[in-house]
Image 1 (cartoon, rainbow, N blue to C red):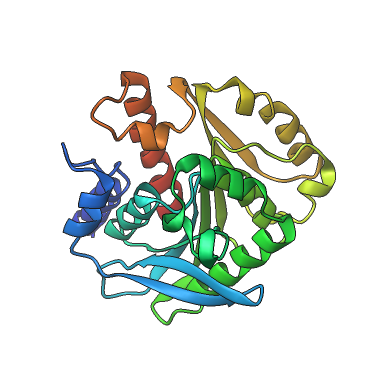
Image 2 (cartoon, helix red, strand yellow):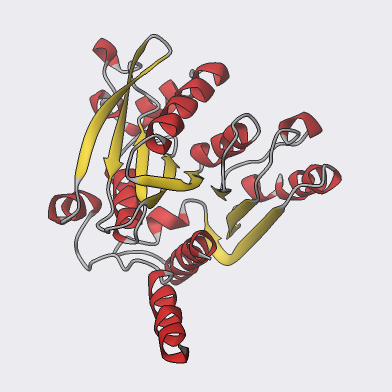
Length: 268
């Protein structure tokens, strides 16, 4: 019995380590080389087709699900590679394209010419429409026959702020993970939150970090769980930048430690 428990502990510890970005392989190459099943789907939302990317785990048992909400750069290869890295660790991940229908000709993120064009379009999205899309994506992945009853949300930058929005308005979330996204500043922004929220921030990101204390205050007053972690020296977007060949030591370290914390919390 002790031997089996030891083996189980070793397995969980290995699963909770940060996925290592292959040297000299960019996110697009990672997606091309991944052995896991990926697919594009469309979901009815707001009277239109919401495009989303699904990455499936390779396991014999039912998988927990994770909703991945992209940065203000739209659903790019890096955001999709996050879904694949989660699938590599036993999760089914869905990454909705929040710019579905907003591109020229009614296209999606990949149909914009530049990141600036995507940022401008993101800024024009209506809060109610965003929430409806996130609900639709969450419902879809939770109703897959291969998912279990554990459901997590995670978002980066703009997507991190949207994690707060969904947590306050959607039931059934096991835990939420906010990566360098601004948080609610008023009590009504947290009144509906039922599950723990974990924040992961770069120390060199004063714009976002200036909101943390007030968010913590309103969460504490409402009796909610909010646990922020700040990684010294890391900047904004360290999860993406920490995977690049030119990553600073602080961003690379923050990326690895944040992945380990994220996976460890979802696997405990």
